[in-house]
Amino acid sequence: MLNTSGYNELSNILLFTQLWTWSAAVTDLSISIVIIFGLWWKQTGDDTALDRLVPKIVSAAMESAAMTSIFAVCAAVIDACTWNDFR
Image (cartoon, rainbow, N blue to C red; front, side, top):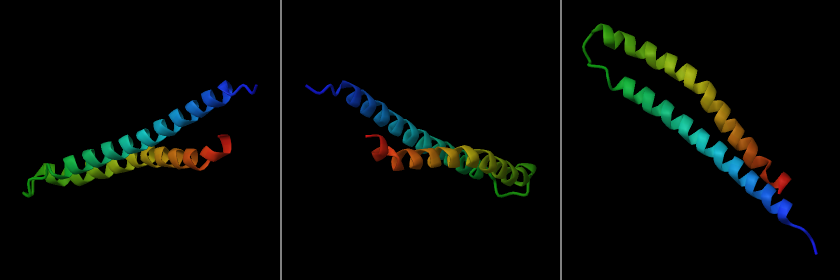
């Protein structure tokens, strides 16, 4: 009789890692979008110091969030592409 318990365990681990990477990518992108739009909507439309500062803060938020978002999406895509190699 063939012992397939190791295969089932590996398959469960691979499924968990794929779910983890995709959820991390979606969460990272969601946080970035919420921060950017949340800051953008804080503008009053007047020529105040806040309105001059918001684009700079949005730019800094996009630069810092872009790296983690790109990494998370790339990791999820690589995990999805290699899924069949390890099944």
